[in-house]
Length: 257
Image (tube, rainbow, N blue to C red):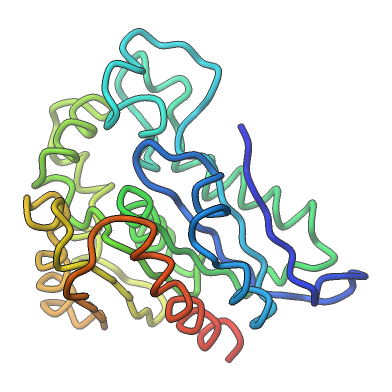
């Protein structure tokens, strides 16, 4: 599997400890989309932040049906650990991201990475992954933000399809990978969730994303959440490129405090 890593100018020469942000892409994407479309490099350079981008699913593992639809299988791993055969052998993106790749970055780039200053962000399916990874692993990520995340996958068509296929019919298991459910029992270090949502996003309008459910859950348990509803913006990378600077500022303020 491929991953991308951006090293800012401050990393040249090594022997400096810089914060890291993992960025998780959405459905149909690879690690290349964020690199070429978001314009994050300018802001990462300004703040001196390393940015890592994993792929969105396993590659080179042929499973019947893995390419029949754009929202399940290849490029649609949902950043979870599948429990249902035949997906359970390889579709373990949750463990890959939060254990294998996480540890690899800390070891391979130990001369420039500060292991105590790591954040995570994502878009759409990747926003779901960022929120879930943070809530499932308290303290692993010090900051988290998401663009148009799938906030309550147990209650939307995308999530129901993915969870049924990867996890099976037991909806109790679904809650373990659903940010809206996980935040209700979050018991970790203080955390603020930043969620950005375009008001003209057709998937928001069609109730695929459901940020209002996440906000309600956060408020019910006192977890701080910021929801920015952006009038006129859709689900595209034009939207992300417009506000990526604000998200980098948000992470920098926390990771460099």
